[in-house]
Length: 47
Image 1 (cartoon, one colour):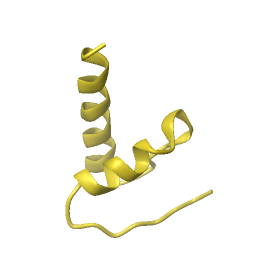
Image 2 (cartoon, helix red, strand yellow):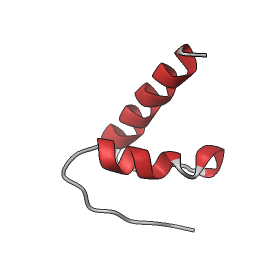
Image 3 (cartoon, one colour):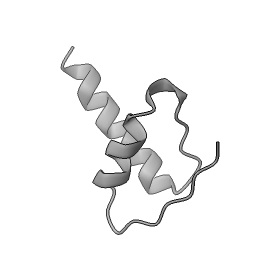
Image 4 (cartoon, helix red, strand yellow):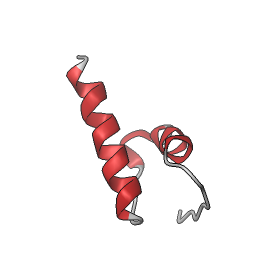
């Protein structure tokens, strides 16, 4: 599935993408990919 979203900030789309777990891949924009990676690293650090 290919999904396109328009957003003014990154936290909402990040939460939405996380619902798909390891099946999700963010193609672009790079800022969203980076934000998602930072969020995931922070989650992993807790465990």
